Image (cartoon, rainbow, N blue to C red; front, top):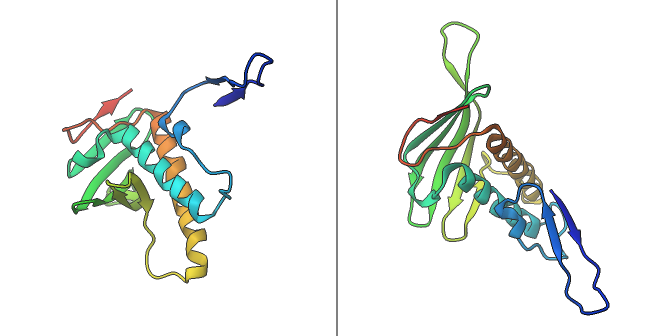
Amino acid sequence: MTQFAAHPSGSGLRAARAIFGAVIAECNLVVPWRTRPRSFVALMSLYESNYLRLAELAGDLRSLPERSVSRVTGDCTLLLCVCERARYTCELLLTYLLPTVRPPLQLERVPNLRLRLYHDARLLEARGAGEVAPERELHRCWQRNMMVNKWLEYCAERGHEFVRGAGDHRSG
């Protein structure tokens, strides 16, 4: 995406912006000038971007079915499962289903990510496994969530979409 900001003209202080390319919802995220990459503020912005990217694939995240599948020609099958529901959160599992090459033929789940969806805050967080030293947790959260963000973007570019109210979607 390319952004251009016009310089103020002599007639006024109004600045116009032209945005070219695909416009996605995260373009409207306001990030304070103090935000540094890998900071807590940047991590919260990343969680918000993850939420928007998943909503692009799955629609209304408050009404996700227990299991959704997206199949696109030329890409792996994408599976989204709701593992647990609470009033303000959901625990999700997002994974590719890959056929194994060794007998017996089974489906391998890679990357098999656990996600926590915060409905009230409109955030999506990739969850880690086990306890991590506090001084390293921010760095690890950043890595996990950046990977989820890029993967969700990739899935949308490949044409994945979970059909609302159906367990299977074939595209392409």
